[in-house]
Amino acid sequence: MYREEGGRERKSYAAVDMDLRSELLKSIWYGFTALDLEKSGKVSKSQLKVLSHNLCTVLSIPHDPVALEEHFRDDDDGPVSSQGYMPYLNKYILDKVEEGCFVKEQVDELCWTLTAKKNYKPGKDNKNVLPGKDAFSLWCLFNFLSEDKYPLIMVPDEVEYLLKKMCMAMSVELNCVELEDFISKDTVQQNGFTVWSFLDMMNSGKVTRGVDQEITSMAIEEVYREIVGDVLKEGYLWKKGQLRRNWKERWFTLRPGTLAYYTSEDRKDRQGNIPLDGDCCVEVLPDRDGKRCMFCLKTLSKTYEMSASDTKQRQEWTAAIQTAIRLHTEGKTSLHKDLKLKRREQREQRERRRLAKEEELQRFRALQEEKERKLAELELLKEAQRQAQALLEQDEMRRRQQHDEMQRALEVQLREAEESRASMQAEMILKEEEAERQRKRIKELEGLQTSLEEALHQEIKARQDEEVFRYAQTGLLSEEEEKMKALMALQDEQEEYIRKTQREKQELRQEMENKTRALEEAQRQLEEVRANRHRVDQDVVAAQRKLRQASTNVKHWNVQMNRLMSPVGPGEKRSSGGSFSRFQIPSQRDPGLRLRQRSEEQDDESKENVDSSGAGLGCEGERRLSQTSNGGMDIP
Image (tube, rainbow, N blue to C red; front, side):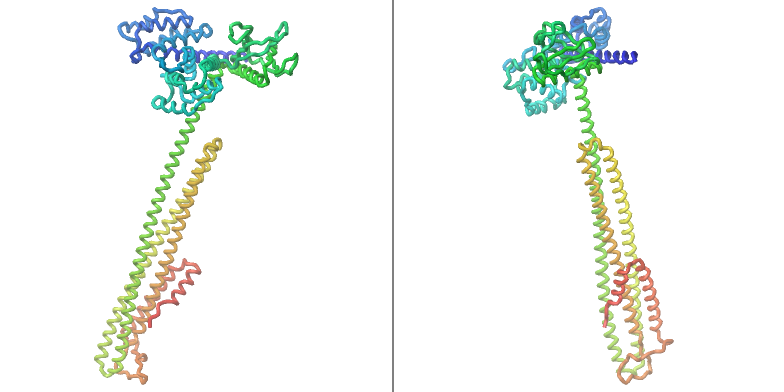
């Protein structure tokens, strides 16, 4: 247990040493760049000697000029680069620094003096120019809050944090509009503030407008002591003596690990120092001895009783002391360093969330493009469907025209048959003329047979069209399955997305709504595909109906042909009633009888094909088929 505590303590000291080295390097960087007059990253050896000697003086370490000469013995004639000076700075100066043996403010003053002569040149006409002490304090605050990157800059969030602290100390409200205008101008190229642009903004008076110069200086000093000086809280408290047990008013200064008290607020006469560690605790006491708002600080050796001016001050003091004890227990020497790291982590988290949101937006755009592509494909399918519908309408119109032509031809044939019947009744004795008429009728029957064959070809074509529509229906069904799979994939993706974003549901609620809209859009597309499939089914039914109509026409032509298959034989007597309908020729000598039998066989074959193609229809389809067959075309 002892070894573990000792190891943790050594680790905290090493961390403190690294933080101190980092803060020293920020100040030294300004001193080095001030000596780089040409901004080439190189400084002459004589200037580096002076800088090194001054640094050793303020850091209270011995200066070894021989080491500098030895380190740069190959660069006697030329300037020395910053990369070459950094190893010397680390090895011969910073590695010898001991914490507590020097005053860091003196190092800052040295580097400020070097850099202010070259870079800090406020306008003399400006009435709001800060005094040199305040400018130095702001420079130190800037170094503390700046990023650990070179050249040193301070991000806008840290600038706003510092300005809010100053305005709070001055009891004024920060003008966010002018601050945003200034940030938008300054961060165009640098993505942050430089210390000189920050001092120019403070000298412009935009932040301290209407505030007395003395109040501004006091506020800067207060913020400087709080952030750079690690002062958690300061103020007057009544303290009860340990020996005389009398009450005296003291000025208390609280830092991580220590609570010091002085005679007055100038902090010249320190009366005592109370170390704070994990064994200390704070308790609230009831009012007594004429004192109110009392509390005590207990250590292992003593108990210190104190009294605040009011309840609010007592609560602030007890909370601040508990914070100081916690920081010391955790091995932290500065509250604001810890807060700075936390703010940096928050900025990084916000940046990660922003990148994640941009990535999600890109995914959403990809989904949107995919949806647009699907819509374009649907439009192409609709266009193909419209073209197919137009082709069907053209075929239907062509069939109607052919049907009308055939009907007119049949009417002509019927009229000719009536005329032939009248002529044959008038001229029964002319056998040769009747034989000639018989040959003409045979030729007409051959023409009818040709028409019947054409009708059969049209029926075959209608069946082929039906197969095409069936293939289109099969394609739509497969597309429906793909849409259903895509819908299920979107649902799985939405469920996975909900599981991943439960911890951030407040920030990503809008994105979940976008996913939901995408899912609804996919469902709408699926419904549209189903509607398209339903329309194609209706087209198939219509094609089947047309096929049945063609079969009905074939039957009708067979009936007409059977009517015409009643030839008049030579040598028979004319009937008394003058009717030619009873005249018959023996079946073995009738050449048209074989044609009629052949037509009936083809009619039976067509009927079987129609029955096989309509076997998949329901009761409604059979009822329509029977109505169509019964309500066919009537020819007189």
